[in-house]
Length: 279
Image 1: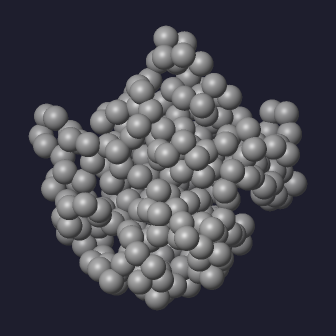
Image 2: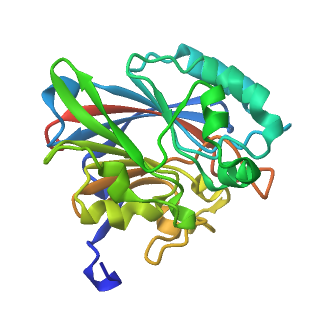
């Protein structure tokens, strides 16, 4: 699909199927909990009301400034499914604190993770981060998918390797899904949006951008870290739509390169899936 063939991209409130239900400051100016509602026409009725806990971009090393707030937040969540969007690691020294966080990720449908660019960098010499994820009790989805079943219905949960470094293989992640089956795609970076839209996938959850980490009034993010043409600073945070695909880009909880954020608080997210179209 060439740039001229890509569907029109929408942002923010124009992505009608995703709405912010609640916004709570867990640590003023530092960590926000967003509760979103995503109304999706093709979601099976059995999954109406599914609560998904979503965290991404922790960037743990010896430095983990929001660690206590994050441990408390995950332990208090009552969700059906946990998804982790990659870049858990800034260095291998972060594993002990990551284990504390992951102990709280309890959900009946499981806890799943995709790798980010930093996870792949940290564990390059050992063949990739999957073994490290498994030590944390997370199931890695590296260009694979699986079927989740609930009350007689099913959806396909797909996960890709990092699209910001062109490591994603969406065809492989969808292999095994049924014709017309609802797909929830977990991917580290928003670079996957046009490939997801070409397949009319209903919902993508991702991170990578840190929301830009530094945002200015009237300008927004100065940087997004994306490498795909047409996927720029406006995709650094929040709701994005392309064709029939809706995507939520989380600001994540960590930082990288610069050890601070400006007008761009860290984010943890609960996504409630609803059957039916936007109201």
